[in-house]
Length: 140
Image (cartoon, rainbow, N blue to C red; front, side, top):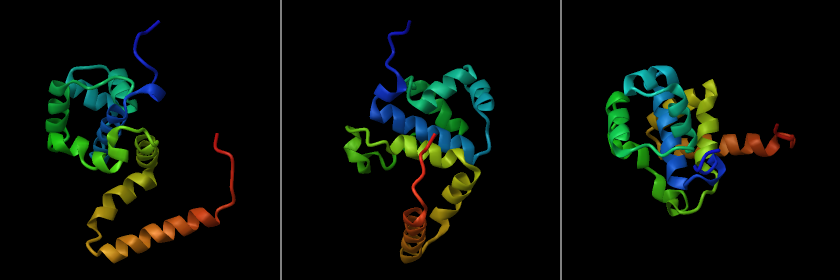
């Protein structure tokens, strides 16, 4: 038995940081095993970090940022926009699901390269319209 809360009860900040860790790792094409070996931990621990089931310590986050070639602040960027970080609205889970697909990861890499804000808005509107037009299906 464990005294740690299940991931659905994890703190929203831990979920968010874990999702950002996963995004950055995937953007660099690293596996959980590769990141784990570089950090000196098990791949299961990386999984727990990414799910928000375990908190990543400041020293491990610093190491991860260095290995993933990003500032530590990257893991918190946009957190204030997600319900002020104090309410889990499912954002971290949606982000993780998004980058878990090859298409989502590719889109995540390309989208910021669109410099025209109106064009980015049109892409969002297009995807939103496509989702609205898709017949409702039960998710597994």
